[in-house]
Length: 146
Image (cartoon, rainbow, N blue to C red; front, top):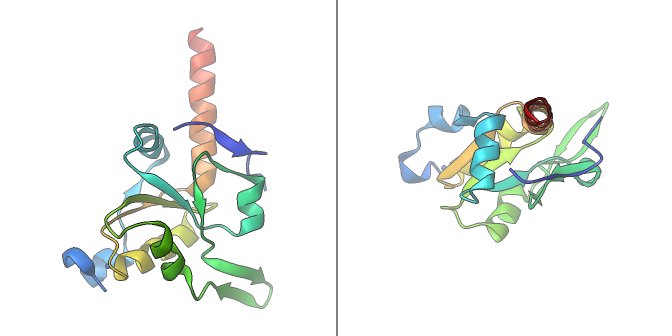
């Protein structure tokens, strides 16, 4: 997958024949498969967390387009230009893995992208936290084998 950056993160219109059900339940990719796809450079990583979370730690080479602009006790403010901003970075046939912290926000973002005509978008199951766990497990397995 390449290195993770930072402090560890603590803390579709149905194009291509996509039906409503597929857009509401986008295809998932688990952390191990995501690492493999990113290592082979066949997919790009789109991080949809807010900027301050992205700055704390992210996947090497990731692009950040926040799905929410703010989260307060009064609610979440969705980025009204999300699809437009992603479209400015990637063509609609780009293979993307969409991730957030835990996989919930990225599911919503992936559904929006599929609905907007993106064809090869997959939601990272478990989000960035799952990538951290996967990377730590691989590191421990490598140490044990040495």
